[in-house]
Amino acid sequence: MKPRGKSSEGPFSIQDVADAAKVSIATVSRVLNNPELVAEGTAKKVREVIERLKYKPNPFAQGLITRSSRVLCFALPDMSGEFYSELIRGADAKAHQLGYHLLVSSEARGTPRSAEEATRGPGLGLADGLAIMITEPQALAWRGTGDDQTPVVLIDVEVDGLDCVLVDNATGTAQAVSHLLERVPASRLYFVGGPAANFDTAARAAAFRESLAKAGHELREDQVAFGRYDVSWGATWMKSRRGGGRRGPIGVLAGNDEIALGVLQAAEDLSLEVPGDVKVVGFDDTRLASLVRPRLSSVRVPLADVGAAAIDLLATRIEDADLKPRRVRLATELVVRASSGS
Image (tube, rainbow, N blue to C red; front, side, top):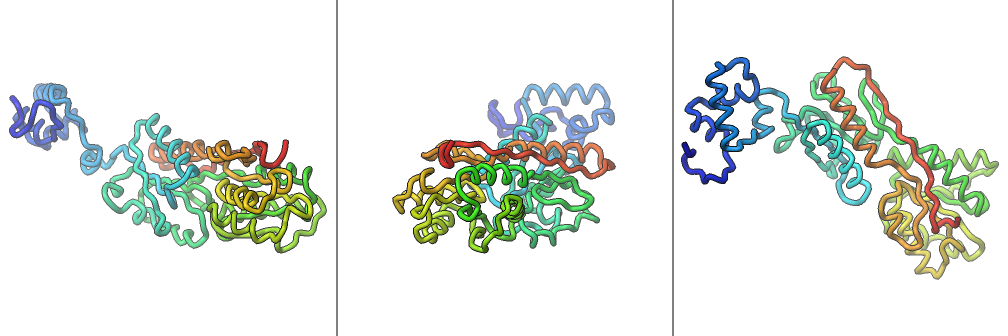
């Protein structure tokens, strides 16, 4: 029997399966989700129709009945640029490996205040769990998971009682500072970060200060600057140096690779040589670091591994809600290229 109104090509709905098998939609649903509740003869007939029509259940529709959609939500502050694309790539690969669908949500308008709010929107309320990146303190108003049964994993921040994925910013920063101090005096070394309140910026700036203090240098206020995680901020900072690089080389540790790219571009505009006049190290080691010329030294953050670790923790939490909260901290390391001198 050919379902009414359908071509032989499909796609077919659960109603089509029910019509072809001459059973109710509820019976088809039980065959898919609780086959032990259906008489074997009826179940066999429904399965034959499912196979013949090549029907594939909608995970969202299944979630309404089973309360298990096999969908995970991955909420990020933004989705543009190499940084976020690598996080998503790692998360998606891990979700696929574990048999989950990944639904990515950009929270560029602001971090949600609760897991419930984060999983609103088309289909998000059916997610089995939520992995969310929280980058700034004001988002810590988001703590209200006590009455929410949605499993949650946090990225970039530690909150008591929740699984977290963190990055060891201190080690990579210390390696970068040590590398630059071999090439410039401490008094001519600068950190150019993103927003001051950003957790990664704050951690990297703190490690920068600590490294210079261990080198016996009393940090000047102008040696640490905060702005935005973009190319224009790096260029603006570099052009504000008023001849920096002409009175001897300076070293710059940028808060990410985009800021570093802005420094490189502005140095070229100022007729300064890299790495002769300006020695630059970025952070994150995105694909951008290998595309620019000179190739950019950068502190490698295993971004794909961060995304994968968050999904792995989330899947484990879904399977066992009684596990003690876990923290995964991923290592960083300096990758030296031409922009800072070999």
